[in-house]
Amino acid sequence: MAEEILSQNEIDALLSALSSGEMDADQLKEEEKDKKVKVYDFKRALRFSKDQIRSISRMHDNFARLLSTYFSAQLRTYVHIAVTSVDQIPYEEFIRSIPAKTILNVYSVEPLDGRIIFEFNPNIAYAMLDRLLGGKGNSVNKIDNLTEIETTLMSQLFEKSMDNLREAWMSVSEIDPVLEDFEVNPQFLQLVSPNETVVVVSLDTTIGDSSGMINICIPHVVLEPIMPKLSAHYWMQNEANIERKPEEYSALNHQIKQTTVNLSVLLGKTKISLEQFLSLGIEDTIRLDQAVDQELTLFVDQKPKFLVQPGKKKKKMAVQVLEEFKGGD
Image (cartoon, rainbow, N blue to C red; front, side):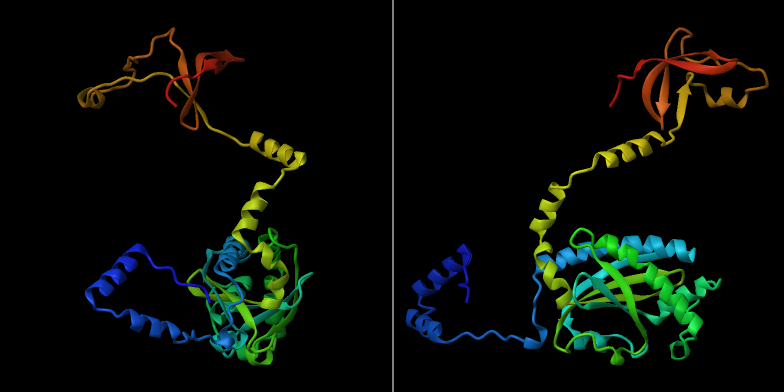
């Protein structure tokens, strides 16, 4: 058992109590002889460190963002998904925590062993189905009598969304999620033994006016081979060792060059009183502070970048760049 380290304040308080007689040294020795027992629940075995749980949370934060974009495009409505919690609990506790009738998708994640479960709250599942069929996204729970067409539509939507999971897990493992089973009753789904530790990632989901939870159940057997990669040290080392391929730089450079920017040239400015402004009429002339032989400033997205001079090119107004703007930032 690890020794408890006292702070300086605790040491000073202990010495003060001994010197004042409030505490007996012999009594302390007797207390040290007593065995200290720490309660441990074997049904809630903590197999993952806090560091590993944080890494899993980071992975699925990215997955939630990707999934929000995917569902927004597929359902043509506002979708917001965010990670609310990541917990490690016994599998039996996870099964008890979800509704008696719900949407359960079971995926294999080769080359990793075992399978993972995606549990979609019926409110969310039926809102998605309603949007797929051209509705407004209303949620009507009729999970007891799903038709074959409805089951197929939802299965296809959920299966295609797994490309986002593959991308989110890319930093730790290249997986190939495949939908193996579609179930509505969790009691018929015995994925692992009841006391097996699983990681449950809960995603708070909003689709239009409907909201609910998406729960991802990942058994320990799935994560066991990649646990060394679920550490902050590995993540930082992995980020430092990333090497961009030349073709990636070339593609990025090409995309940047295709970006459009807004250019504008300030011909001049001046100040007039409100009375002068109100008395302006047709063909009145406003004198600017800009001299005729003075360079103009060219703005790129409202930021000054170049000094230019005005002119014409093929009977159209144009400016010629003289030099880079040196003033300001």
